[in-house]
Length: 452
Image (tube, rainbow, N blue to C red; front, side, top):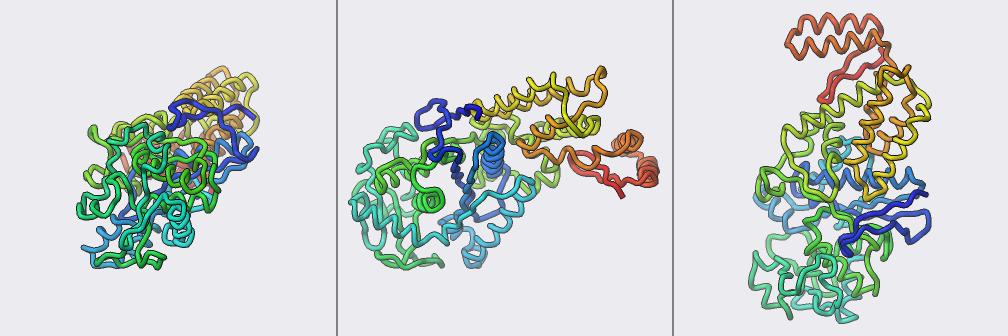
């Protein structure tokens, strides 16, 4: 197997992938809190870790990807209340929207998508262990984690204790008086008026805190000490720092061997966030630009770096998609020339170096340039199909790749006519294409040709 190295947030270094179980990789990535439709920023970790799974599998690893759904949370209560709807109903509806919106990316589903609301038993057991080992304490139905009981606290986010404000007492400062230490964070929250979901626990009716949900869901499916924990860089503190602390305290080992964090999508210089209002909803962006262009945009930069959101960036992604699609039409089915093997290998070596999709795309474009040069006679597309498959862009080699040259030329003429708003000519060309046995289908990323 090719050596794969990935950047680990905790150590700050690039580390070789050393699976706990030889030949198998377990990945847990934090999914959305389902209180509204997801935006393009929520899609970045979904895309990154879905493609990382594809790459691992290409390299011969049996890979299990877990992406949770947080369907019990203050944000859900706050969103449901003014709508006069039960929070569970809102969460269920937004979970379905989330699945539909991410299905539209055509990357497949994670292997497991656990819901917090369906993991209450393991969560309660986890908290019980922390109380018995004196890493947690109950106060009038609430349960808090003793941050100072974990000597390793802060090693993930690299913060000093005095800069560890959990931010959970802002809405109700009176809660701070219940804690032994302002640094402590909630594992279980006692039921309050206006909260319409709760479960019975040894400390009374209530519901879990945010951080304990992920520790329980991750361990339930992957066991402690799994290979990779991922998510957006905004989750490093407090969410992931607290997850790591809970596991060290309860299990005496690290939750994950390696922590990967993707950069945020930036809109007008700020992180994209629903609280700020500077969001672009995923389903709307896909509808305007096409799912291939959205995936292309999200992998156009290195995953650890922020990614600027703009119409220009999406238009560039569309142009890149169109170039690849058109190149694919010029290639034959079958093996690629052996003198292009080096570029194919360089593509996968780029991904093996901290999943550098930007570098891999540059190599892919170089491969296309050489494969479609005028001195070649319709080379095979096997390399391109292999590379696009790992990037989730295999649809760019669609049925239209098999259409005759004459049909492609007519479709190109029709696209130019449509761009010039000569719709009469475009309709005539469409009919000519149909007479040759093909249907032309237009989309945000270009046209496809489908046999009639």
